[in-house]
Image 1 (spheres, rainbow, N blue to C red):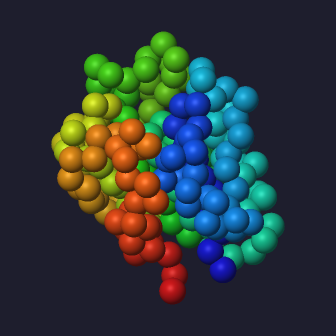
Image 2 (image 1 turned 90 degrees about the vertical axis):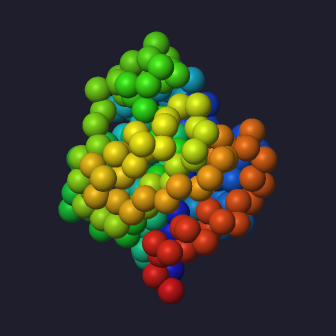
Image 3 (image 1 turned 45 degrees about the vertical axis):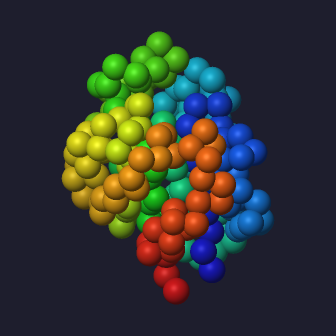
Length: 182
């Protein structure tokens, strides 16, 4: 059984976002984080929220996969590095923003500005876009290397969010499936 922990970016993912659409399809096999600081993200609060969602998912037993988007990628990696012995199956990290990039929301997400990509204790896949306003493909590839994760460039998909018009993002599901057991 595969269980999913959904880790959106700032303000969560809206109803048209691929994370929300996947979560609906997965039903009780998915748990979304619920930090108290959605709009003014605090890294410790988000990491605690990942822990709570992970605990909820792991109670069901099975293979836990972290499904993160945007700032959620940094919360997922911070949680994984703080919990290296957790039996997390894998991490799917989509469109991580560059904390040193000019578009990074430094004021809103000040506690995220010191994050760095450290080797992850589980298999991971980083997906980036050629025209993401929050991260260049080179920076995203560098994060993948730092995380010791596979890297996939998805083409011109913006920030790979609801504004990208991906709907249920079938290509993303195929990439995610490459991380999960059959």
